[in-house]
Length: 232
Ligand SMILES: *Cc1c(COP(=O)(O)O)cnc(C)c1O
Image 1: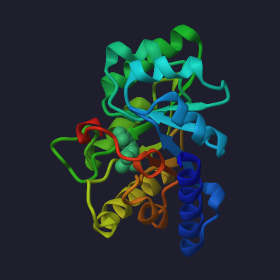
Image 2: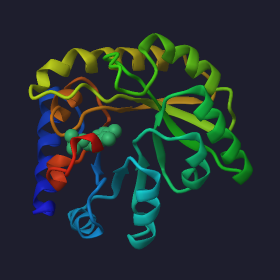
Image 3: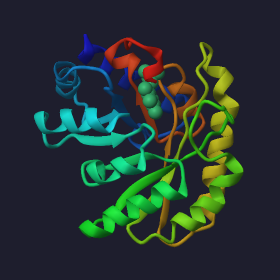
Image 4: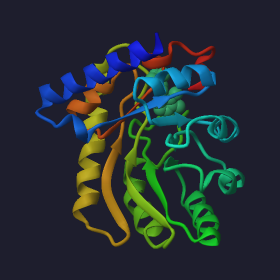
């Protein structure tokens, strides 16, 4: 079931790339496994999944040791500063840097370990009150400040678009974020590699790909519904 759904999502990603004239290798599928048991993650792994996304530090730390070591873990949920030290060397990418203060904490913990931590800046593109992230106009000043942190490496932007039944409604949001991404990339700031644009979820990943996404985060489409929507 999970394996089949994973393969189905892969096919839809390829088709969206084809429509948009893009190379499917430019788009990474992250299997968002929050709230789901290890057996289901292993089913996705069996179908080829190597990138998994979790939104809670405790859950990520509980799952990771029991699963294959070649899995790349992505922290996609809001990260509290007091939890940074627990995950900073366990994940391949933190998608959810939503304040300069959080970036400073990552710097501190990364410096202690002598590592460089890849991060994305989370942008609240639709200005939703319920969501974390920089407003679009705050993103560039934040980038300038965070770029100065030697052990934090900005690799791109992430957004969580509004929940909708109709993916088309998010097209303008994705387009806006892509434009911001391109603007920031063209600035060529030192210690910044603007290569990753993390946008698109189960309901809208195809539209996101058409608008330039390079990472889609799909949970429900692979693993089925979660218990509570508040676990988004
Ligand atoms: C849960 C979650 C997703 C996946 O959502 P689905 O609609 O189930 O695909 C993607 N990104 C983030 C940040 C999430 O928390």
